[in-house]
Length: 292
Image 1: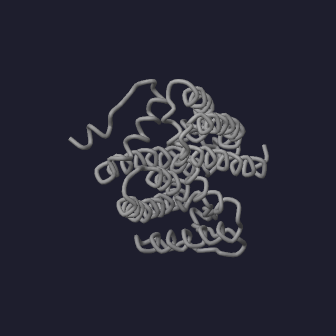
Image 2: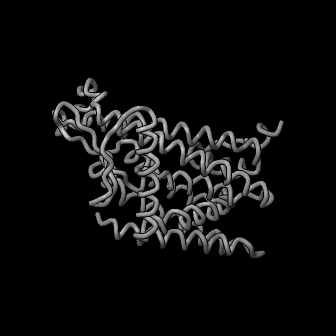
Image 3: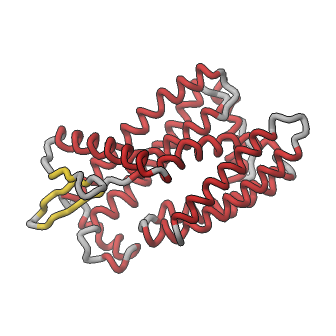
């Protein structure tokens, strides 16, 4: 699977969702619903193409499983927006904004390098602040943090995912798509963007320190079960720290941040209600719960 293909398809998806959002401003909602259904269908193809990448290239079971789940859920959303749940058009604007924020960082080298460099420098500063003194490498690109453990050189490369831009795009897209006054939307974004970035710097620093000091080699039986070819590899600590522990906590943190946002942006509940309906086939009333 070529990332160039998925990057191109991602732009197509964003354009389709943006078109749906624009059509939703018209009196006749049918064209917007058709455009949204088409966008959700292409979105399913997009996630299907990424399953192999996440599972076998990135060695991430969490991202791989979530990508696999996104395929039927996206197809179900396409069906619902045409039949029982026309309000799913509202999510089109959110996904369009998410893509507009994220894709430039994914596809424009200058932005990618800037995000990685800033994150790497912040990560190294935090690692040294807590008392470790690894080597910081900026050439060759990308930036990396290098520990020496028992005579072995252990390198943690800082990649775009380390910047938290994906999570920032998700939450910012949801906020921007609400019907809240612009001032409260901007306030919400101003609060969550630095928080998510800071949490990601902490996450990456923890991974680098744990990997560099081989903290989790004792998890080899679990890693052997999940990644059999890597059972004797020093990356055991990295796989557990990043792909299992840190990614699980990142999902929890994202959920908690979203729930906290409902206190200042109860309008966000309408979008979450639609998303939860797609996932569970159950109607929720989060706005009523958080405004009581």
